[in-house]
Length: 161
Image (cartoon, rainbow, N blue to C red):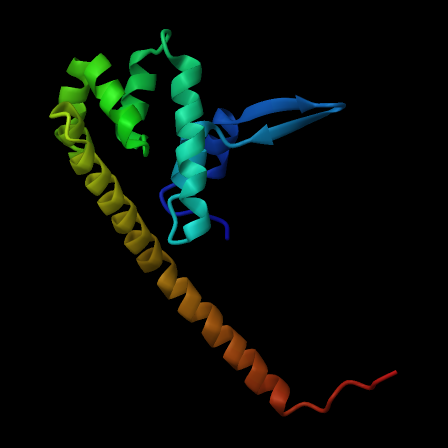
């Protein structure tokens, strides 16, 4: 897996990485925005992993958020209550974001149920796109496995110890 769906090239990811000091080692991690994009898959286990880093990013930058932070939250937040709060606090940015994200439109209207539905719809759309993206590769890998298995069927078994 050399490329993830919707994620920048390795070079770009490396330039944006976050580095942490853990004891005597430096550990390089994906930047939060890149991690969020990488986790938008068809797998159930990935979706809870999107919500928490977004919440943490929002809480850590509250009160000192720049325009890029606010745009990121309005584009990506998965917690309906928090999206409502951000949309209310940054109304002008929310108005702009509402043209591309239904959840933000609902947040501006104060419609918690609408925000929840829109976020669920976004997740389903991302899962579908991910499935479609990986399907040709999955078929190719399955064909390679069948071909390898068919080739091994005509060979003598390796000697046993």
